[in-house]
Image 1 (cartoon, rainbow, N blue to C red):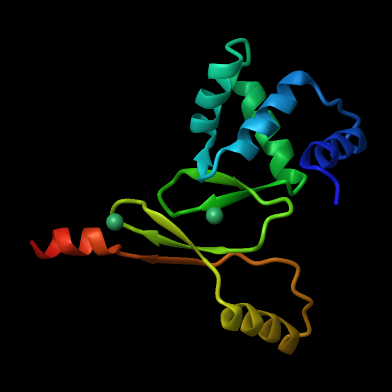
Image 2: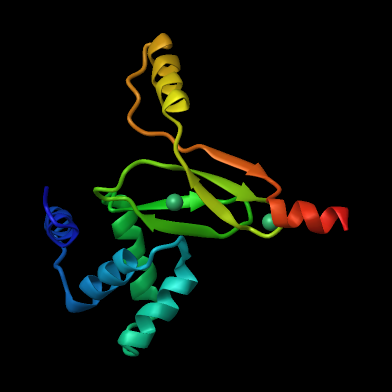
Amino acid sequence: MKTPQDAFSDYLTDQNLKMTPQRRLILETMLKQGDHVSSEELYARVKKKDPSIGQATVYRTLKLLSDSGLVEPLDFADGVTRYEPSYGKEHHDHLICERCGKNIEIMDETIERRQEAIAREHGFTLCSHKMYLYGVCPDCRKKGEA
Ligand SMILES: [Zn+2]
Ligand SMILES: [Zn+2]
């Protein structure tokens, strides 16, 4: 398997674009962060390492990373798009607290298999899916009871 850097470089070549030090820094900052970041948060992190990078560059590069499949946009239903590195990562879905925004990564083989089967029943080959489960986390439930 190619490194994410090589995969992104190949994607950029296909788009007649070049891997620049700025694009590489944005990719590497994205890969290093362990959680789900918004474009604003990513911009803040990138700016710490290279103050000369503009917000537009970060946003455009994030779009390229997302289009290339290296990074996946997530919708936690709070109006903020977040991103996580997805290249070479095991698939997972998300459980999200509607009150505090906490999110947990989940994976259930039975659900995964059922999704494949349902797609097949409709004559589809499943390429990808996103499942979001929205609820109230234990901490927020306790606060609600108190
Ligand atoms: Zn909560
Ligand atoms: Zn995730």
